[in-house]
Length: 383
Image 1 (cartoon, helix red, strand yellow):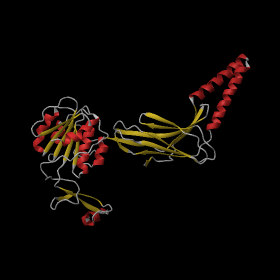
Image 2: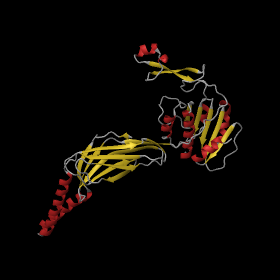
Image 3: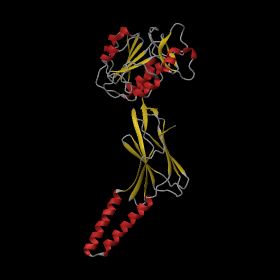
Image 4: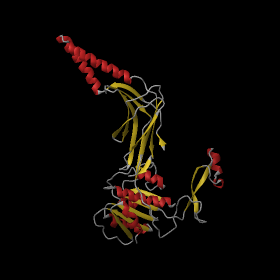
């Protein structure tokens, strides 16, 4: 479970509710009317209203001693899977508390939970579901505990912790890695078991526990004062390039692109993910649009992809060749355009996600038509 930072109280207020303000205003009017007209009854009613307000303020004025933790678990979830917030509240004071209500903002809406009475030293745990029906970042919080009097005239609001963020990722299905007609490429992923002669130097990075000391670059380590090791790559493995057409973007299209990327990355193959609008969200500003990424990173970035306006023609021209190219699009006409780069890649696949009839696949391009993610494994494995 992933806790949001507890006990960081940033706001404490005791205020009149709209009903309390109305009661106060009514008491003032009744007092004025009673004195002006010489009738004691309005004065008695006004006095009763003021006594009710005083009682309500006395009810909510004591500052409760609470230990509050709100946890969001998991912090990253595939679209449609379950995610919950777990709220733990413990009464550290010497008196029983009642009238507590928790308010947690979830995205643009507010979730309210009425808490049961809390005897001295007692705790309560409440869970509530978080929405995971749409990809993206869902802010959760700030969490506020509200204590109100039985009349609803006053309330004390206290803010706890810091907001958390739930990341709803694309759904994925298990797929085999797209085969490539060739196996020799200039770059590949890190590999400790690569065939002899296929491992080459890629970059230097800081040493982490478990690294082979034979890969330490002593000259750079002495110059920087930090232990540096050589990161090696297997140059024999083909790269899988996924190009996602974001015009008229649909969830099944993002899910299909994520499934292909995750299949290749988890099999240890290099992966590049492109869109018609450039780099994926979350990429460093100075990184190339075709920078490789691992399975977890690509899921994080595809979670933030939104509909775009640019076609894929420019991205196709700029994409580095070699390995497999997988175009995921909702435009059936793109299958014909992707044939223009067929010679630069060992294998070209066009995944068309839509209900309109798909055109005939151009020579050298495999066309897969699906309407939902559940259809992809069968269509992907068909020959």
